[in-house]
Each structure stands twice: as structure tokens, then as C-alpha cells.
Image (cartoon, rainbow, N blue to C red; front, side, top):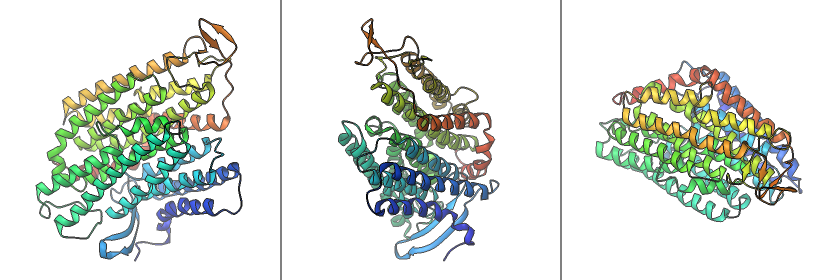
Length: 510
């Protein structure tokens, strides 16, 4: 039976719209053109985003628990219920998913090979991510968590770069292991507690011994650590990003990585609070290592896309640091970091994709002067500077707010790990300044055979203008990054009650 009135079916609409859209695209009669399929996908995703905004308008920020809940008994014999709910932890991520999936469809171009399947997979991933963020049942979460695996594998392996098969296979193996660890933890929870109730409720210490909690929590940490990804479980990410197309990289960095950080907070800290306290010091050190490694690895890259990919490894470490500290301020910072990183990384990958299409390379050793106002990519370069400043945590940008909250909430609990993470934050400015200085300043020139006038062994070029359908999404993302930095209360009031309630579950940490 269900909970609440008909208005509460809004959460189901966030699943029915993208899943129904998937079937519509796959079953559409005849041979529709790629452009028609793209417009249809944009319309469906626009409707999904509108419903997400409607959910936000009906959401009461003062309530720390789940709202707009739906509950229907599905397979009671194994504890699988259709249970949905939204709170201040999941709602911002649902909005990010709706916005960035729409951006991915808008910037998609030149999909002449199996366009029907391509756009259907975008819709399927979006619905699966919504389901994972809204699920209040552990098995239901796992079903949605696994549902996005094959569609993303197809998007990389079919529409990726030259080494797409290798990158897609690596992604598939790592993510499959992640799913097995998470499912093993959920099933182990049922085995050790003697219950088939997989509802999302904290585990009480009198129902599960500390040894059992630690084993299950470690399994979850490894499973979600692969998805985030944390060092040394990150190996799949740079290859996946390098070979994926720009829309898929936007989706992967902006949305799908957040399944790992969300799961860490929702199922790690919430289900095993006492074990979390025991492991928190080690988690803080793990976070600092990921931040420093991601930053140092990014500095060593000459491929712009791999640099941005390694920056994600570092920036996701901030969420683990905040979760380890477990204070209300730190956990609010974790939500800010997930949202801000989603917007910033999507912006950076979109801009790198524009540079690659216009120049034929992402190599920082051969790109120069792209900010040239007459023959270069001045708007792309200007937006890249905005994204770089936001990622480096400059005041007035979303990255500053998220990092400040994480560091402010964590330093009293784990001062050493927080200070090391601050060093990693400083290194972000180093590698992104290298990117901007090498690629966008100086005389416009590219080493590959493009252009007609040779100067100093390089070729001067006249780059084609950027299409509005690529520029406008980039401008929208840049505005979002700036507005979130200038008006942080727009996100803070949505999540503060939920993160405070989550911190109270692990109150022993603080």
C-alpha cells in the first residue's frame, strides 16, 4: 500500500518519465533522423527537470527526514519494497542529475551511428540515477545502482575514442566489483541481523556486533570507493574519461561519481554509525591521500581531459574527509562539494570537448593562444578561466563555499588530514594555471598540420566559431557555478536540516 496522496506520485514520475522515454525512443516506428531523436530526448529530459524543480518547490527544508514518500510492497518475501523518498541529501543531486543529463543531450552532435540507442541510454541512465537517489530500500537502491552500468558501458564502448573497448571493459570490471561488494554488504546485513527488512534504517548496536559492523562497512567503503573513485581504486576513471565522448564525460563526472559519495553518506555513516566512528581516523587519512594524489597526478598530465579527470579524484576526496569528520558543517560542505563539483567538472569537460573539436588535439604541449579574440576561442577561453577559478576555490565561486565548509567542519576533528587536503586544494590552482597558461595565452598556434602560415615550426590557425548549442549550456553552467558561490543559501537551506540530522546519528565522531 502507498503512503500519502496523489501528489506524492511526483517521485515516481522522476522514474516513469525517463524510463518511458527510453521505451518510446526504442519503439518509435520507422527510421527517425538523429536530429528528431535528439529533440525528442531533450523534450523528455526537459520534462524530467521540470518535475525535479516541482519536487523542490514542494519540499520543506525545515524537515530533516524523508518527504514525499511512496511505499508499495513489491517482493515482501525477500524484503524488496518500492520505497521512495527525498530529503536534503538527495534532492540537490536529483536536481543536478536532471540538469546535467539535459545538458548532455543538448551538446550531443554528430551521432549518426545508432542514434536511437544512444539517446535511449542517456534516458535510461538518468532514470536509474534518480531511482538510486530516491530509494529508501537497500535492494531497490542496488537495482538502480546496477541499472546504469550497462548503458554507460555501451556509451563508452560504441561512441568512445580509439581505445574505447579497453576503457569500457575496465570500467565494466571495476563497477561490477563495486556492485558485488555493495550487494554483499546488504545481504550480510540481513544474515547477521536475522532479518529480511531492507528498509533504510540505522543499525542498532544491540542488533549487530561491532565486528560485523566493521566487516560490512569496509565492504561498503570499498564498493563506493571504486565508484567515487578513491585512490587506489581510481584506475578506471582517467581511461573512461579520455575515451568517452564529451556528453558522456559530462554525465560521468557530474552525476555518476556522486552515486559513490551519496552511498558513502547514506549507507556508510547512516547504517553503521558506531563502526564509522572507529574507522573515521583512517578514512580521514585516506581522504587526504586521495586529494594529494589526484592533484599531483593532474599536474603531471599533458592531456587536458586526463588532467580534469585526475582533478575529480582529488576533489571527491573532500567528501570523504567531510564524512569522516561527521560534523554538521562538514556534512553540509560534503553536499556543497558534490553539487559544485558536478557543475564545475561538467563545465570543464564541456569546454575541453569544444577545444578538441576545434583544434583536433587536447595536448598542452601543442596548444597555444586559444584566447585570441579574433582567430581563437575567446568565449571558450573565458569560460575555462571561470571554471578553473571555481575549481581552485576562489572566493565568489561554488568551489570556495564547498571547500571552506569541508575544511571548517573537519579541522577540529582531523587537523592533519585537513591541512594536507588544504595543500591539495592549493595544488589545484597550480595544475589548472598550467592548463590555462599553456593552452590559452600566447600566440595562437597549434603544432598539428592545421592552418596555412608556418611560424617557428608551428602553424597559425583560424579556428571556426563555436555553435550556440555548445556555448549556451557552458554559459548556463558557469552562471550556476557563480550564483551558487554568491548565494550559497540557495543550496544550504535545502540541505542543512538533513545534514544536521545525519551528523546526530554519528554524534560520537564530533
